[in-house]
Length: 107
Length: 119
Image (cartoon, rainbow over all chains, first blue to last red; front, top):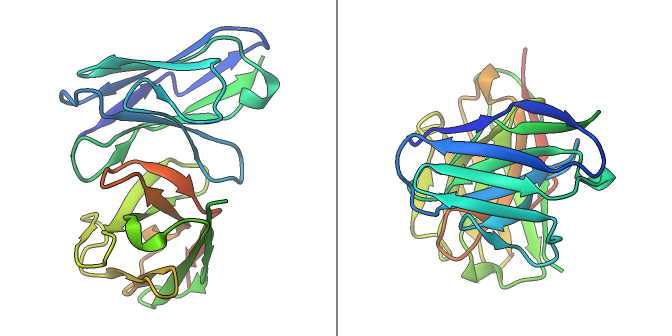
């Protein structure tokens, strides 16, 4: 199985900060990375597919980059509603696998 | 509006069985692959199983292969997960999720149903 390693596992940031979350795949996966946001007690929400494609309705505050093995999710200006846990996921090969998550907390 | 609503979770003893359902609405259910993903409370997401649009092809995580069976009824817009020989480590919230096309990423998710395996 392809392992997805996210870092950091948690971070504290302030409203307005720029936040970057990284995800590394155990092998090259082209651009087959997707990013989800999950708030406590809620289902995950798809933010970005194919490494860089912002989903409809997701604010442009979010952006994704990378290819091969290294990927990033950037939140340009952190807002109160962005405090959540973020997961990367590879869809290059079955079984689809997720990173361990990054919890973004208020500083 | 796309909606996925899971049901059927609950408390079951080790070795027991449970069947989860996922009722879909707001889209052409028969055109989409659907997946089950689970999450131990406070932990990460783990893919469990998927079924293609007409139900002719399925796939499972190694951890559930031979114990879980995914199926669908396109006439009822409903997905199922039959879980047998349940173990304590199967305790989790189970989400159904719509696959985007035939790819293995998930554009809509249900709210989840909690399965607890305990004596």
